[in-house]
Amino acid sequence: MATVAAAALVTAGFAVPAPASATVTRAQMALRWAPIHYQDVDVTGSHALGGRSDYITKIDFDGDLNGRNNWDRAGQAGVSFAAHAYYSVLETSTHWYITYLFFHPRDWTDNFFDTEHENDGEGVLLAIQRDGSMYGVLRSAVTVAHTNFFSYTPAGSTWTSGRESVDGALQLQASPHDAFLHPVTAQEAKGHGLKAYPQYNIVGDGIVYYPSTVAETPSSGDDRDVQYKLIDIFASDGLWAQRANTSLFANLGTFAGDDSGDCGVDTLDCSINSANAPWGWDDRDDLPARGQIATDPAKLSVEYFTIPGSMSRTYAYNPYASAAAALAAAAKTAPPVVD
Image (cartoon, rainbow, N blue to C red; front, side, top):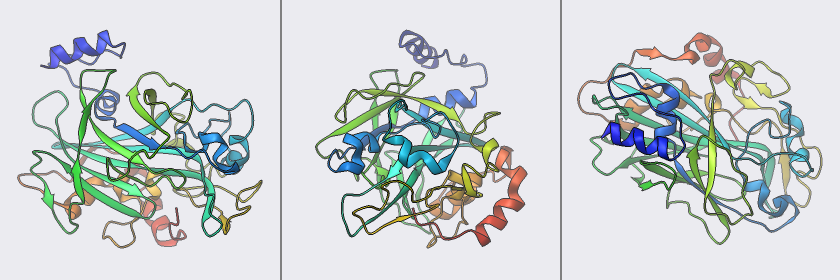
């Protein structure tokens, strides 16, 4: 089956996966399991930018790594809404853990009684069990919807509720761009909370994003086939390498964002420094600490699920570990997550 899947990927124009006898790369794992992503779009109101405020894109969509100009630049000419998502892959001897971050330049509203803010970063953690096959077997997903996490399991998973109850089923769908079934996630318009489809769904206008090696720009706010490209958080010039960039981050794990331009106009408020990278995600009602959904996903998995059999808690690959002390300090001193 791995040989057939590899051939299908080549036909579809993807990078060639490693043969079944070789070790799959982390980039190949991320592409294999990347979600088919349903993005609801609202085109009403000036802050919607005709729907573009709900498009996923790169953090440097405007050509720079200044988080404090993204709200304004999103409404200007010459910026790119080509579809991208970020990923990190951590490994133990028994599992892969893949975190995906979907970024929007605006978390916005057209309701006077709601707040909005510059930048928005929400996503999902997938746990993949090593079972001897090329890409393993998907066991669970935990999504980020503002300041709450939601847990899901696909059909046939051996994982069940733990300290947290499983919130629903994780669907898998076929992609027209490769030979695999992918987990399906969805984000609401405006605030971009993320859950497993169809707990969120497209209502009216919307975009269906498919994982790929190319980055397409939606033709409109109602485009049902847009390919998105993955970016490694741990790349040498990637998001993790920029964590001390004070133009991009207000503190460790929190994107810098101000209230310039029309952010907050005709709404209750524009909050500052309100969006988070994966190592800043937090559900304060749950036991895992701030950021551990990305930095120590084995711990989060043990807390969220009842997991049969052996499960290693020792990482064979975890670049976050080099900043463990700083991350722990940030978890104690950073302002509460308000995304």
